[in-house]
Structure formats: structure tokens, C-alpha cells
Length: 180
Image (cartoon, rainbow, N blue to C red; front, side, top):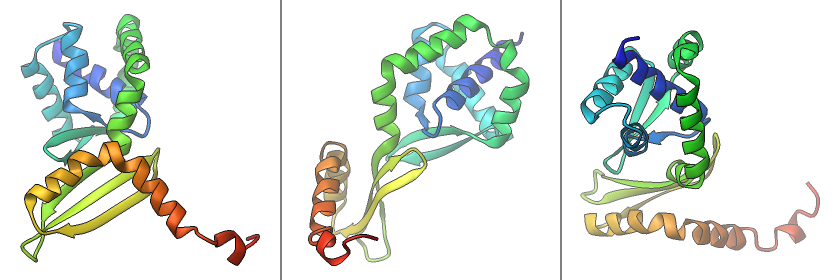
């Protein structure tokens, strides 16, 4: 079996098994490099070819690339998954079991910022649960430094912010709308 083909199947298998979440370049690379499957050059070559072929999609959030399997990638995996050795499949499943919280948190809670037309920055803070977006906040801030600070603090403060908003916005909701 061609080595690059094996790396592609490993990546597709990982992205397929992570369910509705994405994996970062660091997460994919760490798994493959830590187990000595290949080097960084081959990982990037495999990722690049699969993006070009439409098997995976990539999005960039705060300078971090997040990968997700596409329908075409799922179809390819269906045909070639049996060529991935069972010990590698088990390594992947064990890795997900060990790192589940970290992988889940990477995908569910994130923030990014970008310059807008007002010479300010728009910050977007998101909390997702599976396919559902629980909270998507967008607001403008005057400086890049403030945008970076908000993004850096979002993961630690997101639960508190979400709880605060729900409590404040739902005040007296039981009295006004008893049973809907």
C-alpha cells in the first residue's frame, strides 16, 4: 500500500470518527507524529491533496486550521476503510478516548476576530454543541489588542457569560409565559 494513501486514510478515519467536530492541524499532526507513522512533510502533503480533491474542508479560526471530512471524503473512506489496519484504528480510538475533553473543547468553544469597515474589529464568540449553535455573539471593539484579549479569555469565561445571559434574559419568563 502506498504510504501517502495510508496517511490519507488515517486522516479521513480520524475526521470521520470525531463526529460533528473538527480537528486542528496540531491534533492531527500530534497523533500521527507521536506514533511515528510519518513526518510533518507527508502529513501536509496528504492534507493538501485531500483538500484539493474535496475529501476534507478546512477553516481557519485565529490562525489555527480546523479540518472536517466532507461527504466525498466519507464516500472515499467507505470504500477504503478496510485497508486501514485494525491496530491503527484502535490507536485512533484510544487517542480520542484519552483526549476526548480536549478535542471536544477545541471544537465547541472558540472565538475569532477580523477588521471591519469602521476601522475597528469584529469579535465573534461561539459555543456549539454538536451541530447546534448555542451562542454566537458578534460585537465591535476599537482595537486589535482588545479583540485578541477577548478571544483569549473566551474559552475560560464562556460558560459564565452564557449562564449570565440566560439568567438575565429569562428573568420573569415563567410568570409571563407560564406554559407554552
